Image 1 (tube, one colour):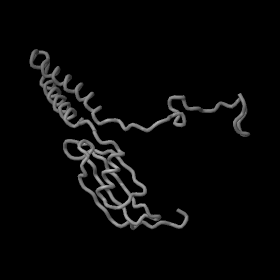
Image 2: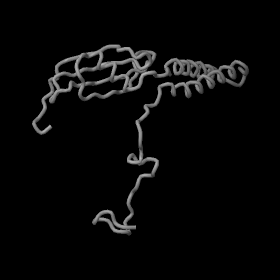
Image 3: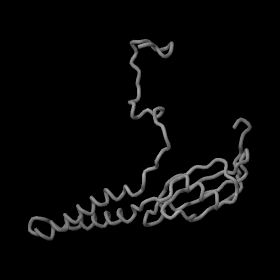
Image 4: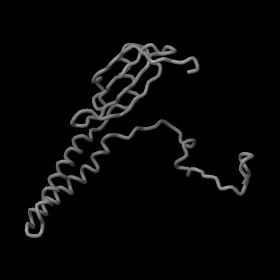
Length: 167
């Protein structure tokens, strides 16, 4: 083993990431995890809730009312998880395209963040976009529904941030 730098010797122990965690070995586009994965634990909650309810109703002599209440709670939480685990049909690239069409100016820098909106936790892309000038004169915040692809709302304003000369 040869030394990579003049500050390490062959006897030094150097931390190295495992091959499967090395970001330099990764090739290809990043695939954002789908929101429908929430349905897997939700189904488990539903099964546990139904089991607790059936167990408390079938054997009332050895099971107290807390098991029934826990079963109802698990069933309700699981049903909410199944409902809110909608499949996302719009990825971040499509959300960036939809946001550019909604705001009406050429986009320079932009970023998309997946968030949940409303009581039903509907998956939504929150897109922050800046105009293409240097420094950018306009900025926009756009919410794009990740299920249907429609623009939920958008806000466009002049960019009032101060940009230093060394930026």
